[in-house]
Length: 263
Image (tube, rainbow, N blue to C red):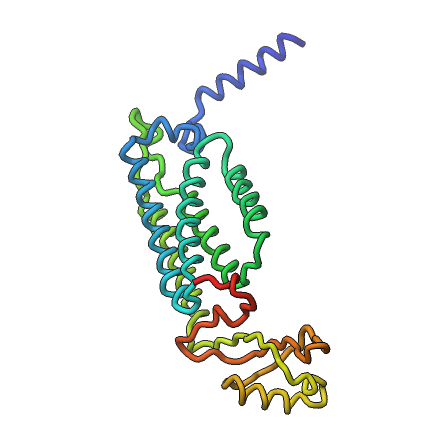
């Protein structure tokens, strides 16, 4: 029994020695990345990632988001957040802790910071897009190992990988550009009104209410929602829906208190 087992092992070893070893059977590329990439290549890779991410983020924020909202606080937040996210993902993606801890840190940050105030849905959407692009630009492979079967394997910049990463960024920019285009859809927005004629808030006088609102605030009202009603002060909060004229912003329309105003 032992002789049979030994003979079987020897045959397997012999067959393994005669087998052709190709590139797919070598060690995982990730295990030799640090040893084979030069300092210049690492700096170049970080520069490509950072520059592309910063450029795309600036285009999205400056030409699409800020053009309508005029919120300089979010402008600063988006630009810094995107750059910080990319650098963390790039650095921590190459160490043992991996990407999971990086995303966890930003999740904790989001729970602690953004839960303290109401962030508009448009700003949250741009924040998510910026985080997604930072993840793509920080983790997408740019270099690939070449000549693994030779005596001098090394890493070389893959133009195909760079083109794919640039294409992903371009598609996101085009998509947001189309959706933000005034020619595609009219920008419907809201205005919060403290209304004094509460006798008109009943459903049977809805048309008269809309006519009075259009006369007093100077917009074509599409719809209204009745909010809090104070019968002691004869006032009610009304949310007015209307189409925003081209080039006009509405960042102040829902502000009720002076301390909520951010220039």
